Structures are given as structure tokens and as C-alpha cells.
Length: 243
Figure 1 (cartoon, rainbow, N blue to C red):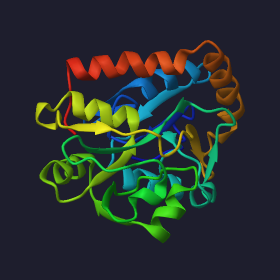
Figure 2 (tube, rainbow, N blue to C red):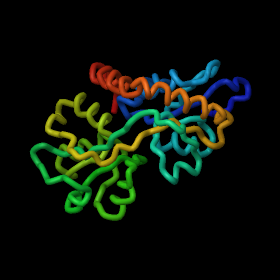
Figure 3 (spheres, one colour):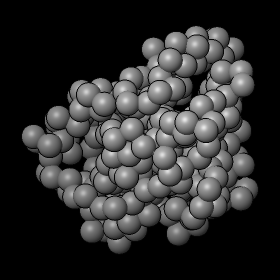
Figure 4 (cartoon, helix red, strand yellow):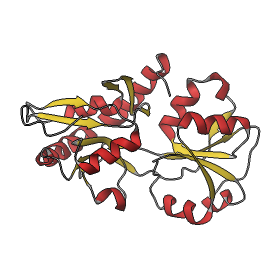
């Protein structure tokens, strides 16, 4: 997988999280499905072809840093990522983040501080925004696991008290795993920071950033991104892929 193919300069090589429905999920070794993929097709510049690079999410971010992929389709803005990525000026999607917990092991949850006595879970390379990343590293006990499936499994077994992840992706998991019926999303939300499309600062395709930002703004005014999320959540529930 190499971006910036001199033989075909009209190609944007993109990667995304292969286990993050309804935003995106891998359907083969060379293809993704999901709301982010449909939105990316809607905002790509005329004459440009998209080429998927199906990689583990952590490696996808490393490849973007190295310039081996042009674009990451759906990622939160953080200071660290801003060192090697240029983000669309308009969001791609809303991405609310929630605390998931077992219905039969309730605990009071009004503020982040209510999580201090508990043990939580988070997935490798996830970022939550809204100041929560800094807070949990300083104040909370949260165990890292490689995937959402690992974390929901630990939550189901009672090995952790809660799991923090995107609301939509968490609901997609729960609704496609009958053994997770005892797990629910709590309110209030942890954060509601948006996710963006982002070009590698080393990409020769970065000049498309302004066009794609304008298209995202146009489509967002029409409610397209949120409609795509709901559409692909239903599609995933009907035909779930591996998580």
C-alpha cells in the first residue's frame, strides 16, 4: 500500500478504522463499507478515484504519519494528530461518546468524577475528545484492550465496570450481539466532539482538502451525514460483519 502513485496521480489512498460501524468497517481485505465510505464518495473531487487500504487502525494512523496513505476517513482532532494530519475545516460526522455499563450493576453517573471508584475500559488508539482523554489519564483507572469486542466481553464478565466508546458504534455492537442485551449506554454523554476527514501532511493529494471541506459543509446543511449514520446502522444490524 503506497500513496502518491506517480503512474496514477488522481488516486487518493485512504484508510479508516476497520471495526467502527456504522461509520466504517472492513468487508474484505481490500474494501470498506459504512457511512464514512459513502460520504467520502460524495465529497471526493471530480476525476479522483478512491483506493482503500485495509489496515489495523493503529497502523493506519502510523502510515498516514509516514505518508504511506493519503487520507484517514473519520478521525477526531487531537494535538498529537495535528502534527502529521491536516483536517477538513468542516466535520464529517457527529461522534458522541458514551459510557456503557451493565444494567444489573448500576452506579450513579452524573459527572466524570463518579467514575473514580470504578475500573473502566478503552480500546487501543481510541480518543474521546472534550478533555476526557487528559482527565481519565490523570484521574481514572481504565484498562486498555485491543478491540471493542474485548472490552464488551470484559464488561459482560464483570472484569471492568464500564467501557467508553462511540455511542453509535457501541449501539451497533450491542444490537448485533444478543448476549450483550444487559449492557446499556448511560447519560450524560462523555463528549460530543465531531470527527473529520484528514489528509497526511506528506500527501501529494492534500490540495483537495479545501474542496472536500466545502462539500462536507454543503452536505451537513442538508442533514446527509446523520442520515447516513442511521442508514448504515440499520444495514449493519441486518448484515453484521466481524468486530
